[in-house]
Image (cartoon, rainbow, N blue to C red; front, side):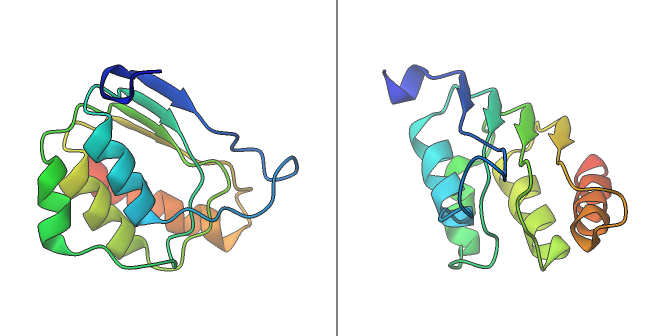
Length: 119
């Protein structure tokens, strides 16, 4: 597999079939850094693990990712995640998540979705 030429990547997003994610926003940033042609990504992460600096996000500006499915990724700070996604993936047009509507994470991901649509 040639990471720079990768256009689609699906890492299991099913919460039942896998343990909680060990990846972070920084891991997502590294993936964006080395996979510049990535257009579609299914990837769970833990937003609370690690920090990403604004300068680091600038290294992937104009990334061509269009579709991101975060599955059942947990989120505590929707504003932080929306800012990260808007800075890192300017062309992101579809964000999907899989939390039931009565779950607090559904509300938080909905907030992210609304913010990046108008970024």
